[in-house]
Image (cartoon, rainbow, N blue to C red):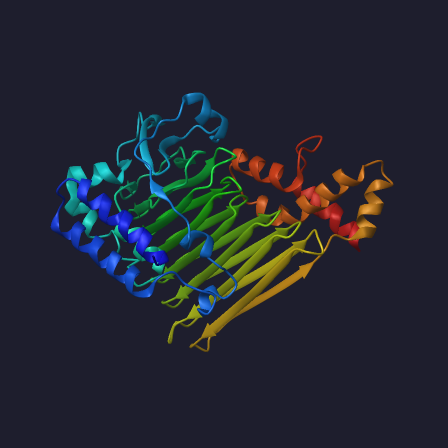
Length: 446
């Protein structure tokens, strides 16, 4: 039996138990299944996947979860300690008991995709799939074929959401399962909000999450988008995030990857109106035999647009990282600025990074730059810290945290930053001032 056939058989079995649904949904499922069957899983012969082997996913035997049974105590041990509007899924199944959507302000709608389709499927049908179609990748096609749950977030024009909106995806241990969440965010003109995707789970889980997120920003909208991926080290995680930005909108992505055995993120932003700005901030930390692959693309489709990207990788043991970032400037998109930086820190001689920053420019009045560096901790800096009474493990943790500091300093949510700091540097004696730490580390290296 082929790798794709196992998934198609699961899809067929699911369709026989599914209630009647609108014609457009059935048609899109069929299109997703047909596309997936036609192209199959990518291999390392495909340029976009040359450094990432997905056979662990393709050859896996993943079922679909039927329930969202998870106790409050289990969830509390994993969730972020945040005052937030919370939508929770367990193995892809919505859990009303673990969600908290009370007192949503006027002009804000947060609900599971299943309910959005039941309440008013026509309102969802237009935007859903408009940015990420079945042709984007085999995984996007697979997500569309299985599309039945996820999150819908709508923010009315002029609405400022004071509390973060937390979309929480929890993974249980047991027989391997898969889920294919779909996330749709529509930010109206001059609205402002923070949306957090958080992926976590029980330590022994070995599940597969394949998520597609589509985010649409109207004129002047401001969206801060955090993705904290700290899935169990046996989980597989594939994500496609596509952002559409209108005039004067501002999108900031904080892509923080700590967990997962095999991780692939595709992040694309289309700057379609003058004055649109996008900021990609990323940090990925790998240990053991983790594999973390980040592919990003910024499309400057209009003049007078701005993008800034700063991704940092920290790899230990035999971990493997991939960074492929592209800035694309469309013809006649003049007076744009596009900057890209990728820096990587290898904590082990066996860790490995494949980095490929790219610029593709078809206009002449632009300011663009890109670059990548890879290095190790400075032994002289470690020695200097040890002479001040700091043990070696703490010294290495401090310098590693200093390397990550340029990204972490811009993380405005302490609960998120603290999770990253603990993963990267371990339990340090106290919460350090990152700005001062970076300055001290630079001074020691000079």
